[in-house]
Length: 437
Image 1: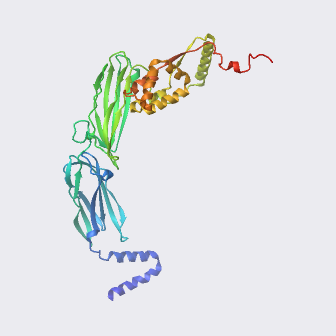
Image 2: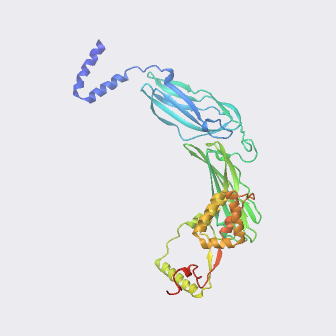
Image 3: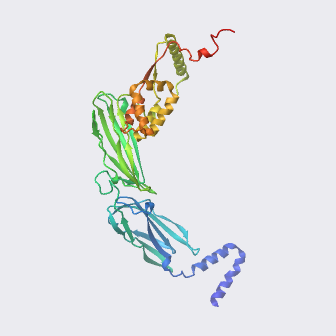
């Protein structure tokens, strides 16, 4: 009764405004005792995210998701991680804190952490419990509690493919979500002559890997060049979805002979952890010497010339055309455009004979004069016949040299220009020269 009377006087102040009411309610709630902690008020779970819900292979990335839900006030916290024997690991970013609504409608603190782990061997292992050491406010008193996760059985599958796998010495085991290769030269290898040197830099990037898991520098050697291998640079880039491994390989290649050198492509097999299948990335084949560059940079628009230069070039081209028409004995040079030659080389590098034949068919329709020159050349006719037998299934069994075909059909061809046009074949039918009736 005394306590009740003590509150009646302040209650008369409620009519004076909402601020006084809010203050009194805050004081009243501060004096209420905190509820006793229930077993479900402090929980920590660790969940492995498996690609395709399939047991991982050795050295394949698995994401561990730590999630803590705490229905109490936390003053201090510290995560104690188990040793993770038989795993390598890296944390992805910082811990995150937020709020979440419980099934009963009350709010709670939410803790999240993501760790990428990589099992090193085949077998069945156990991820020991994680411990979240919390200092909480328990009924107005500081208290330390340890919130532990459950131990998790962790099987690592044995490779059952016909070849390769984590334990095979060759080829290099490369499990990743995606693999990309970039290839750059300085200067372009097709422009160098005997005794010149060009530098090649290849960058291999794999998603879901650490840098130490990337293969060593490939061997780049062929007849007619002297190769000087440069240093290998490795780095791991941390992203919210997993680490990205990047390796940069470098070579200096000196051309030792006068003739053109064909540098073959280098295949790098890798295991797609998303589709659970083996795939192949390739360092593309290139030609050293023997022509002008066909690189994508050369396909970019050139800087605009001045109007005077454009006018001068136009008059020069017009004058040259008059001279050729007057002489009537010039020889025209035909060749596929740079973009078309680059597309041919890409189809050849990918080994796609169907795309290669389709590209040739399109250009034979668009460039009938060039197609006529190809049909008059025995080497081009033989290449087209072999390509058609392979694509249309007419019995061809000889492996196709698409790279050689790309070089063959990218060559410049000369076409003799006649001074006088041939007589139209339909001339007798056009009404001229008929006897008068």
